[in-house]
Amino acid sequence: MTIRTIGVPMDLGADRRGVDMGPSALRYAGLAKTLESLGRSHTDAGDLLVSHAEERDPEGRSADAKYLDEIESVCGRLADEVADALAADVLPLVLGGDHSIAIGSLAGSARDAEIGAVWFDAHSDVNTPETTPSGNVHGMPLAAALGWGTFADTEWANAPTLREENVALVGLRSVDEPERERIRESDVTAYTMSDIDERGVVAVTEEALGIATRDVDGAHVSLDLDWLDPSHAPGVGTPVRGGVTYREAHSAMETVADHDALRSLEIVEANPILDSHNETAELGVELVASALGKRVL
Image (cartoon, rainbow, N blue to C red; front, side, top):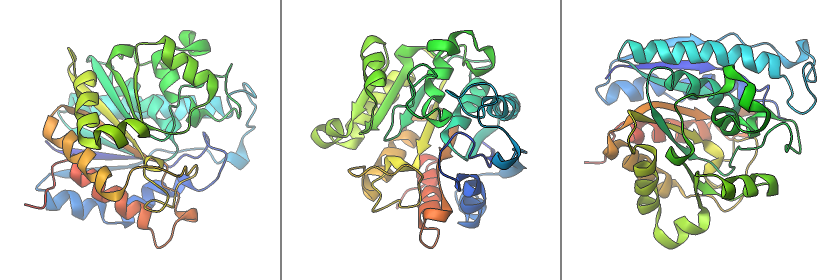
């Protein structure tokens, strides 16, 4: 399948600047050449236009969901781009940007199909404006897609065909108490780093993919680079010690490729300001290649 990359240089959902340069860092790390080496036809749709934080009031709509008007605008356009790619039988590869862009990725992927989602992340991202400790929307995208809290009446943010029972969170190690309670009350499946330690990343990823693909048309895979341990991916906005290793991350992405149910893919939270020699973006490109089928032999 042809791959279409869509850049979303947005850092409005985060509290630390720099992830808006993530799409450029990933491209500079050789993304196009890597995709071509896989034998995949590839087109680059360029970057969506995103307002600069300095030009906007972060509390324009709500202090509990900063820059929400601007995020709605970007995610609405991203949803259209993702849906258009899928309608053309093209795999959308979304380059972030902070994780709030997943609202648009999920909405677009779910527009004309039943989907599940696998969320590779240190964080669960299911805060809502009522529960958030920071007001940063990059901690809310999965709650928005599922219509939780005040997002229940927010049509632009919802992924209408994404059901809780088809969502799997993989590798959690930083979860706020309200998020913990909401996950326990829901049909979302969550795997912590302890589960990976005990069972192995391949077994956990296979099970997560089974959940995400059960009775649906395909799975959206969201890869937040802070899922990896900071020793391997230092250039992220919200690093948390104790993440997956370099080899575990590749094994998980290879498992994604083996499942052959990928409908849409995004990679987010690369922050070159905090990086060393662009190594986090380079690792991100490697992981994208593994998710799309690259093997040693």
